[in-house]
Image (cartoon, rainbow, N blue to C red):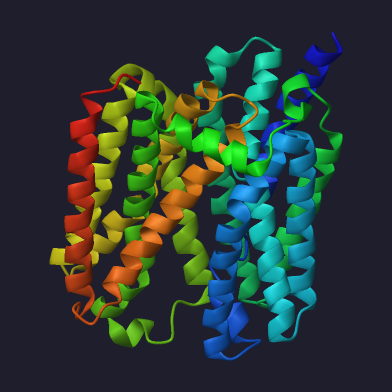
Length: 396
């Protein structure tokens, strides 16, 4: 009975945790904030510190979750985020910002995969696993809505003082921490795994040889790579359209409004993603959403027109259609002993795949944005073709 009441309490609190963790008020203005504190080359280094931190923490944090339990890991994730935002607010030197960036990377890595595994475990305790897909879709819509609201608030506050968005995100981080401390133990979420990290990684990688999981793993990697392309090159595309308007970058309010619109457009698609995957089939939803994102990349590559900027407001829609159905297809197929380690490896593979693509595009052979986008489109089409070919051989 205790398990049932604990699971019900956790499921009632869980959307508040997700909303608080996703409240990235700083996201539209972090570059401007860093630039107001440190030199330009140090701003670029801080970006590298964050991405290296995520890569370094991704798999160990997944193993930690499998080894020591979901609830404890979420407490540490929220603590890291709250502490990171406090350091951002107080920091004045480059090395203080390095510490903040590493704490931010650690918090997000600890949360990655653990959140959805915690959700699944509580649904299992109530014998509601069949609702996992639809509930994950609702949770995904909460994520997009929270990020949209945070962007709008952050852009407005940054117009007054650039540090205020970090103060607001810090308050959200404290809320997330309070929620995690209110979570109650549920059997699977706090059952420790007895394996060492090498064994956990080995078994996780072995799962990719299982036909459905192997295809889903590759689908996640391809989707991650393709979804990153319009995000990475959006600002450069705007500069190509109107250099004089964007030479100094967007104002904080403009950046916040734009990001809020991108996220808001995705909310209804995220909410419907589970039912669409059930009705049309997961493979079809994944393949069509990747193709739609590649269509946006194609528009960027071959057209210099403000109408393309309007269509680019849709660039979060493919991810909104993919996130919840992919999690719902993958997580229940995995043993709880390796679930988050596997999800962390999957996330790491997607990040490294896109990083490799950027490394190729940095070669002297590529001249200008259009050529880079054309190459990115070609790579995306090849990956999609491979994914589609393999789709006919698996049942998911």
